[in-house]
Image (cartoon, rainbow, N blue to C red; front, side, top):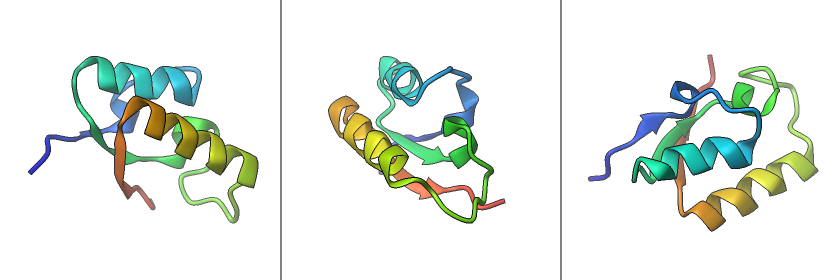
Length: 71
């Protein structure tokens, strides 16, 4: 079992800063909310560029986005 946290616990201006803050507490699992990257919690679509940016950065920081908030 891994200890995780809600990503919205940290208020940061960018996905890079957000994941860095999470990893800075040695937490490597988070429930993600798309509002953390400026979208609605349940958007009709997610721009591919943004999705790739999130994926690239989470891999770099070794943070697993284990679930997605949908409300």
